[in-house]
Length: 223
Image (tube, rainbow, N blue to C red):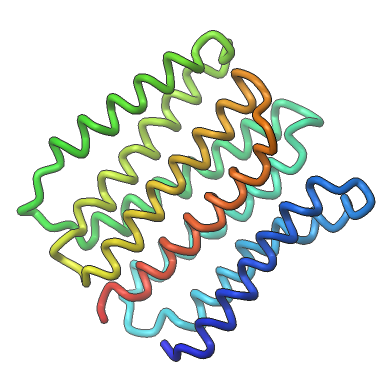
């Protein structure tokens, strides 16, 4: 992967992320948000397609599936204030995306890795977060619980790649998975507990970073 082209894409990608954040905060350019947000995953999909030579067909297809369902989730969540069904649809789309990431990560699982410590750590984190959220979830308790289990499983499967891919790939993917958890945690707290100050900034920055790191990590797993 040539450094100059990678740097150019990285700058371009995070300009889109920042544009998405600004357009969600400034009423005068609010319409731009409906183009900028889908452009985040669209640009990442195009980048991945151009750079995925050397990966197995399985990894390419399932990663693309995860990115496409993430794009669908982004689009649906833009309208979640109009109807709860958009939020549920977005949740379902990201649930499928995380399951696909789990399959991609487990394809390079290191069977000598013990997931006990990381699993217990993430279980404790998830239990604490669910306890904070529970009073505001109502009928969303079961869907959110399922989603939490899957995204935490995604992080565990990212950890299990250690030693079976390059250290760079492992770190990028694992940090991406952790960033995804942080982003979704902020989103959940903002939606089900109380509005957080400028939550759109922290949610989109961690989300954009998560998807970027995961894709970069997958692309570099054979290098």
